[in-house]
Length: 229
Image (tube, rainbow, N blue to C red; front, side, top):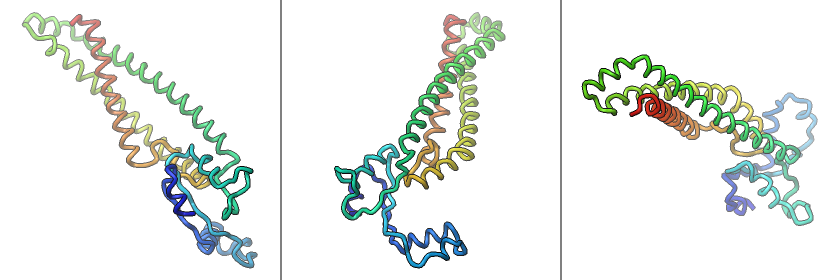
């Protein structure tokens, strides 16, 4: 059965746990001095497979493969535990949160764009005499505009750095602890968006790139509108 489980494309890894090891894990969790352990007359545990999935949303698909058409467990399977009571509710909540987070991101995107636009506009107005002098001496449009665009990029990257700090703090002190509890209950690989270092690097890089892009776009729009270049 282990080879069959490994062949499923949804499965990341499979770990076989003999009944003796299952008993050792239980004793480690509750403690050797626990009344439950002292009351055991033998080993009540069965050998099992601990399955980690690539995508947590495929948990029911994989679980159904251990069942027959009539709903009974297939031959060789005594029990199936994957948090069946609340897994659908959990994914419904995470889907709803994803939509809300997406809307918040869009709102923040346009807010940042407007903020940088207004900041660059004020900078242009404050330096309008310098701009006029540069035009009189024959400075090119690019020579006039690139300092403002650079300023917008720096502001965008600075905002991105602050966002990275907030994401890191949220991930370290909220997402990862919650993730560990859910992963332990559902036997899945991961839930937190930035719960692993490779994903953290990708997310943080994306935040910096988006921040710089917003700064450049906001500056460009302000320059086109107010400098007429």
